[in-house]
Every structure is written in C-alpha cells, then in structure tokens.
Picture 1 (cartoon, rainbow, N blue to C red):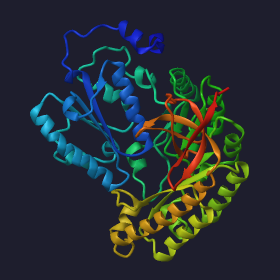
Picture 2 (cartoon, one colour):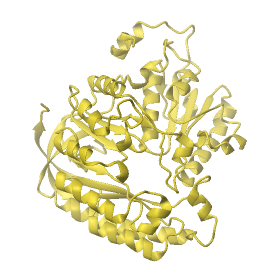
Picture 3 (cartoon, rainbow, N blue to C red):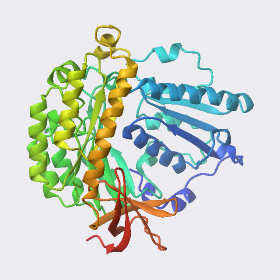
Picture 4 (cartoon, rainbow, N blue to C red):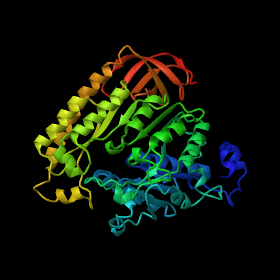
Length: 460
C-alpha cells in the first residue's frame, strides 16, 4: 500500500500531479443518491470518500455536478420505482448539460437482472454492479488528482463520520423464497480478516469511534476463507484497535447465530449489547415456505440464550407481512410471537413481488397471493402493537443515566445513541460530536429518548 494514503488529505494532495487545466466548479463536483440497505449506504460512503480523495467535492443538487451516481436497490418494487423516478428527473439535467455523466449502480444492475438493459434509459451513461466502488470511481470524468490505484482511497476517510459501516462480506448463499439479493449480488465472498482489521485501524486512526460490520448474512462471515474463521474471531481481532470505542454488526441470520458468537459479544466490552436477528414470520408453515431453515421454537430458544448471556441486550428483528400463502391465522402467529418476545424494534415490510424468486411465482397465483389492502392492514396492525411495546420498553430508561456516543447535531440538539442503539437527544453549548456523553433521561417515547447532560465518560 502507498504510505502516502495514510497522510492527512491536505498533505497527500500536495504530493499528486495537478490537473492539466482549470476546472469549473461544476466539473469539480459529484452527486450521489442512495436507496436501500446499510450495505448500499456503506458503498456510497466509500465511493464519496474515494471521490473526495481524487479532488471532487459533493454537490447538494444534481444539476450542480458533472458526475451523478444513483445507487439502486431491488429488495422491493417501491425502491426500484424511486430510482426510475429519479432517472426521470435527471432527463432535464442531461438535456441542459449533456456532458453530465450518469451512472446507475447497485442491485438493479445485478448480474441476473438483464431486463434493466432492455429499458429505454438514455439518461444513463454507465451501468455498474453492486459494491464495485472502484469501477464507479474509474468512470469519474474529471479527477483532479490521478492515483496509481483508484481503489486506494475508498476506505481512507479524511474526516470520517463518528460511526462508519465497514462491509466484511458480499453476496449471499441463502435461498429465501422472497429475496432477490442472491440473484443481484451473487455468491458469498468474505473479505480476509487482516484486510478488514487494517481498514478499521485506518478509519479509527482518522477519528471514527464506532464501527459497524456489514454483511448480507454477517454472522456467516469467514466460512469460505482458509481455516474457516468465524465472526467471533473477527470481533476479537478488531476489538483492541487503538481508539475504537464501539463495535456492532448486522444483519444476522438465526442459522449462523452460534453460542461462541453470543458469548464473544457478551464478553467484549466494546461489542454493543444490540443484535438484529430477523425472524420474518411467527408461523412454522410460512417459515418453511420462506425457506428460512428454522422453526419458531428454535428462534425462541435462540432469543432466550442471547438474553441469558446479555440481560440488557436490545433485540431487533425484521418481519414480512402478506407473504404469499400467509393467511390470517399465520399472521396471528407473528403477532403472538412479537407480543411474547417484546422486541425493542421491528422493521416491518409488506411483501413485494420480486421477479425470479420462488415467492414471486407464488404471488402470481391467486390462490396464494395476499391482496394489497390486506397486506397494509396487517402491516399497520403489527406497527401499532410494536409502537406500544417500544414505548413500554423505552419507559424503563426514565430517570436513568445512559452513555451516549454523540454523532452530531439535529435541530438544535445533540443526537447520539446508547449501547443498545437507542436514539437520544440533549442540549448543551459545547461541541459533543464524537464524545461519550452521560445523559440523564427525562422523557421517553417509542422511537427516541431525551435528557439532560450529566457528565462525560473518557474512553480508556
């Protein structure tokens, strides 16, 4: 690796050749628009760091940029519709400024979605598959600095956010009936342990305090690497990185959430007591249709082991309502399980037809399809129940003093998160970004907490 990439950006830039001509402000700017999961967000963050590494600056509006990237999602039809709507808006930009370069990136351009190329999308200059940050960077029309290896600056943040997502794995080997991700992102590929630790070390050295490790099935990381290390081994390797304050990971799968991983999270002080473990349904029959590979009882037992090891853990989950074949009694099983387990948060989605999936074939059969109005009724019913549960669980924080890693300012207040990932707001005249505030909670709600500054904890 070129040691120059470890210098502050200002010093690094002075060592690079200057552009052959003066560029206009628009030629120096990029615009990145992202739809989808945390993996997409991470990819876009890494791309922006790379673009800034070759001299670009972000633009607030697409018409102010010479390079426009739309990072797309295919998980639900609504995500694709948002991207197509954005492409429609860009037609005016291309008409008024024909030299603008537009890239469509992400899961809509996955290897098994050839239909995207059959659509009339003259506004798009280039199509790039998911997570190929270096390929997108190579398409930038006006790099101010030329790097020997365009992939180098991807993780070399000049001024990273307080919390940074680091992908450790790409693709997915599961065959869930409803999911298009394996078709778009391909088979699982784990990044080597040393490579991940090196990236985390560099990001933290620049000022990041919290790292979230990302994977489509993050707890399956390492099974395809020599020696078959596990996520528990990676967490231990990262835990002692100097300057690291907090460590998280998502998204997990019940089939890979082994006791060794649970005990490791419980033992390591920097591993936060929060686990996202998608259940998707509370009915064994629907779980079998979904091809999830576990039963409700097995999931229930797993939650019990996690809570026994970490009594103060926050449990979140994902649920799909209205999956093909789901009848009212099946949905009632989901309601019953949510009421029993009392998750801190549930990410709820109404089933969306996806081409090429087993569930997509079922959805085309009226015998199995759930009418759209009924999907929304079930979604709202579960949301209302979960809002009440979240309200009650968060009420336990009233009059408690919690530790908050402050991420920044929002509407005149400081915003940060507890170890359990609870969102907290408080006011103070000092700059608290990146610091650990002790906050006395004075008000609670379903989705956030508010309080008064009580002190500061200095990390060891």
